[in-house]
Length: 113
Image 1 (cartoon, rainbow, N blue to C red):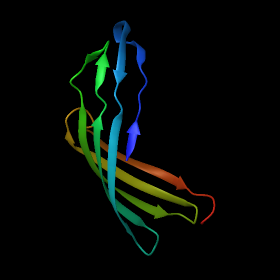
Image 2: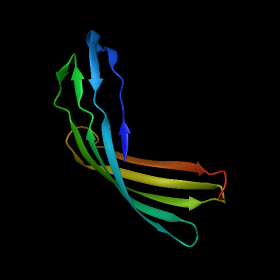
Image 3: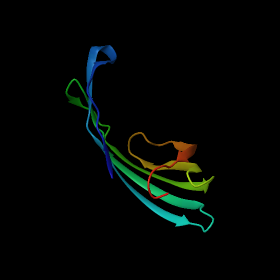
Image 4: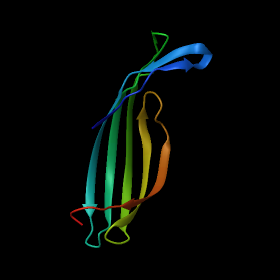
């Protein structure tokens, strides 16, 4: 679960003031680890909130959005791995209806390695 907080924009377009409510999210993951150290996951995220106001006037932009995706991670060595991930907006009331793909390098350190 997560929450994103926004500060007011007192210098919004046309000299207006933009405010945004917090955006809440809940994630779920199903993960499978292979003996080789490779792991894969299927993911789902639900977002709600984030409604905006301009000069105190409420906009009709409440977010109620679902995303699904997946991740595939390959270990390089004990501390490093490379991850490939993708997600798609599957239900979007406002915004968040886009496709995403990416690659990430992950480095771990500390106790427990």
